[in-house]
Length: 148
Image (cartoon, rainbow, N blue to C red; front, side, top):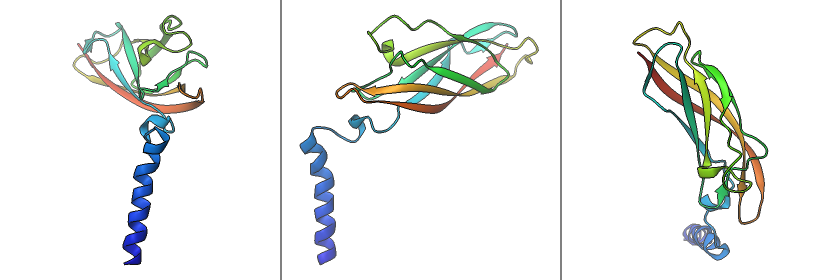
């Protein structure tokens, strides 16, 4: 019976404490935002250029700052990276819509009818707006494109 009382006590504490502090675990900014990647088209010709959009999955109280800048390493796919599009405009010191765009080029020797999986790692800062605390994160991403 003591075990049940202790367990109930801890469950109540875990439920009531976030309510008393006015924040939930997801809003605290303690975990890094996830990322997703998508290409601007589904299929490309060999040698064609495209745009990869990296979207940061942030909570309502978390934003991605412009400084330090977002960096990215492509780890597979044979895609030639041509750098980020300018993201200096927008919401003051934060990136607009929590998205950045990266220019790439499909290899000239890409096989027609093949699918290329672009994978990589993006490094970025994220800040909790309510208290201004900022941290750094590294997240992996993946996107697929077809070659015409």
